[in-house]
Image 1 (cartoon, rainbow, N blue to C red):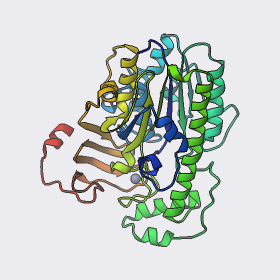
Image 2: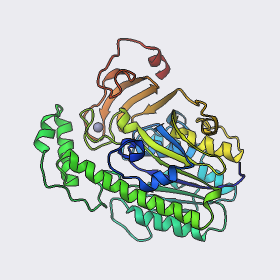
Image 3: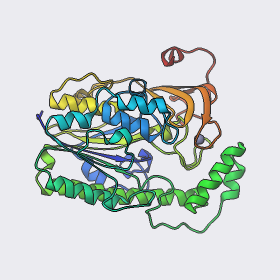
Image 4: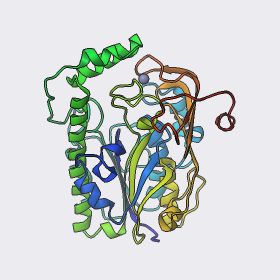
Length: 394
Ligand SMILES: [Zn+2]
C-alpha cells in the first residue's frame, strides 16, 4: 500500500477483448499490452455500466453507478436533468486527488463535467477540427505533462482511434463491396439506412474491411500505450504508479443484426478488456466478473481511503482470487429506457422504451432473457414471465 501513488488510467474507446491475441485472437494486435499484462491483474470479464461513453466515463471517474450519478445517455442524447445531476456528483476522483496535492491531467475532448478537478484538460495543443485527435498526439501531450509534473500525478488518457469510422488510421480497404448482402440481411428499414450511412462514412463496404481497420487501430493504440509504459519505466515512476488500461465499452461489428456501432445490451457492446497494475501487488489473469464502477473503490482501498461509492475494491480478488461480485447492472446509453442485469449465467434486458436514438430503430423489445450457459451468443430470448432477475432490475 502506498499513500500517494501516481495514477495513470488509459481508456480505449470501443475496445473488444476478442480482438486481442492474449485472449485468443488469431492476429497479434497487442504486443505491448501483453508485455504490460505481465505483473498486472488482467480481467477477461470486465463489464461497463453502459454501452456508451458519457455514463461509462462518469462511472470510471466517480465509482458511482448511473442510478447514483444519474448520467444515463451518451452525447447528444444526454438530457438537461442529466447535465444538472452531473454537476452535483458527490464523489469525483480528480477533485479528490487534486485536494490531496496531486497534479491532475486529462487528455480527452468530452469537456462538460468531465473537466472538473483537472489542472490540465486538453484535447490537443493546437486548434483542431479533427473528429478524433490521433492517439500519438494524445500520448505526446500526456508524456510531456507528466514529465514536467513535480507532484504525484493523476493522468487520464482517452484514446479514440478505435472508434468508428477510424479516421486516423491509414488502412483504405480491399475495394470489395458487400453492402448489398449486408443491407439485405437487415429487416428494419431505419437500421438499413443507418448502416448504409456508416459504411459511406468509413468508405468500407465489407465486414472484413471494418475488422481489418479496427485491428489496425488496435496496433496503433497498443504501440502508444507501450510508449507511455516505457516512459514511466525509464523515468523510474512506474514502480509507484497504479497503471490501468481498459475499454469504456465494447463495440458491435456485425452481431445481432447490429453493424459498426456500440448499440444494444449484448455482450459485444458492454464487455471490454481491463488490466490494472498495482504497486507491490502481483496480479494475475482472472475470469471473475468485474465492472468499471470498481476502479475508484480499488484505488481508494489501495490508498487506505474510505469514501461512499458504489463499486467494490478489486484488491481481495487480485490478491486471493476471491469473487467480488456475482452480477452487473447496466443502462443503454442510446435507447430511451433500456436496462440490463447480467449474472455469470443469465442476462435479463428490460426495454421500457427500446427506441435507439442513434440508429432510430430498436434493438430490444419488452423483456428479454438469455441463458448464457447454453446460449453464450445471446441468440434465443427465453423470457417466459416474471423471473427473479426482473424483480431485481425493477
Ligand atoms: Zn441503435
